Length: 246
Image (cartoon, rainbow, N blue to C red; front, top):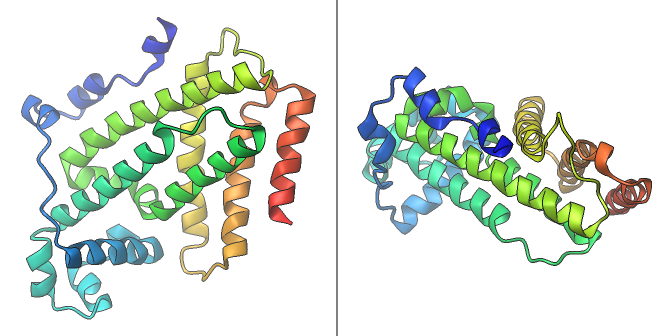
């Protein structure tokens, strides 16, 4: 019961935002994307990661791709069509990395899985950098993101239960709960991705520097579980992260 009470009440949020019932239920498909459209979407992600989606007009994006605005509009009729396509890619990538980790996993594989999660979020860092702008650009993205966020938190709860079963981590005790720790993890992931994206937006990071960002975020993730780790597990996690940085 406590887990249910602590979940974000999506319907209440949508009530407060005055989102009509039809917009909550219907999921209009993203526009059919041609192979060239898929290339454009991938390039748009890179361009938005550098400059921010809210700062790039369709004309600027077209110019960066050596296309005319009209040609770009052929693939994505409106800005929102492009944003919706990019959100679908984000949604797919997050669900893929969080859905079915190959259990059982060693502690080293758990650490690597967490690094892989950060890499997926980093690929879409423009979205978290400009979250307010994008969820307000299209109500469908707003609704879909709220539902994705709730789903992701549930998946993190499942990972915590796996940690407890396999690595002698203590269960979370009242007044805290596994749901609260999971929500803190999600908020930390997304807020740190936003911070790193803003701090490094125009820097040409090497792969080594990018790996350091992933490892730093992974350490922050496990630090939220520190109160529930044995000293042996905490040392083992720190050692595996240190070795990956060597």
